[in-house]
Length: 518
Image 1 (cartoon, rainbow, N blue to C red):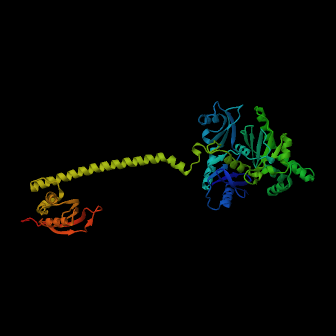
Image 2: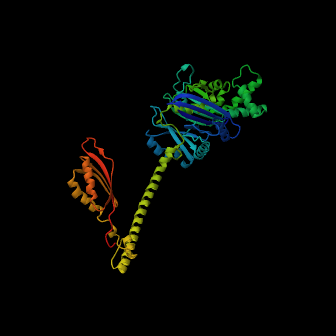
Image 3: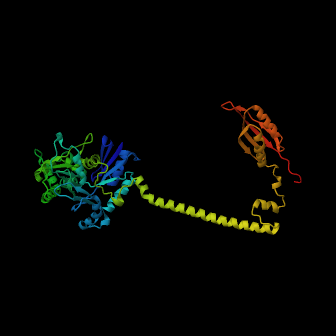
């Protein structure tokens, strides 16, 4: 079972969504939203601790929607659509449209699917330092993101959900707008279910709250509470104070309205089909009357997006995390998805880390092996030279003292100490002589087969076969005639499997007297 965590750090609250699935079949989904009480990063740490405890374990993948409004989006055209060629030339094209140095930004792209306008793509550009700061901070919280998404482009993945009520088909050309507390994200989707325009611009619920706070001389917290409970952009039978508040909210929302109108006109000026419908999501989209107000001002049908795709209906503020999870659900493992973590910023698992370190480890092992072999060869050469030197010195010493060169250290020591030659002290006859006698005389006289003969300096062990037990007695009598045999022990006599021979062992103890004069 795969466990996926989606994180959206908004200006007003932290949104966390956890999805458990088996082969992309949803087993459970959980959404949690916690308003900020401290800085966004401290609030994120508190939200993770609240959801997972002090130790975060069991998360397979983490998806993260990059916060802020510093992300730029450009539409570029290429004479080819091959990903390898685009990757090789995209950096040069970005230098022509971005005011920042290419080393100070991180970027990725997404192809626009449109048969009429081929080889066009949307490029997202983010500040590299800001991206690295978030990666480092999330890694410190044990939730290193595998995928960092473009918050506007990512909204297009909500198409995979059946967002329209009563299973009505989606329009051919529509747009999704995420209106947050301080930031708005716009994504338009063409008839081929591909995002062809994406923008991030400032504006949202914070401006409305500040306008109410200044006009009625109340705190921002009181203004936010009144806005959520009683605020409306289209009052009908409300008291004059409500009409005044509506006018203030409409004025605060003018930057958002103006930016949306520009985006709709710009899309038409590029020869694209007009937007037929506008869907709203985000925390501020819950404001009463906002759909009717924008529909009237923009002359486009506007509707609140219903996030019903994960076994329960999620609130509009969950638009970003829902888009992250729906993208995971709707794409194949090898499909290319927009991800700011590219090249040196790419996510590295433990296996990827080992793969990167494998060349270094290979060189280290090879160097160690070469050094070991070189050390062994050097040591052998040195020991051989030292042994040759000692042998030469021993030869020179024995030649000077004994009159003969002796290179055997044991023998030279014995001769130099005055001890007699140890050779005469060997048993006479030797074990070899006994073996020759046994083979030449005894084996030829008796019908006996020797299977094993074990000869030691003072003992001989025989394993033999005889046709009858009398042959064993005759063999023992013949062996006792040999002078050096002191004792013969006969082992257990056993019949062979076929019953035709007798198997018997003999243990012979040798005790030859030393030669005279020794």
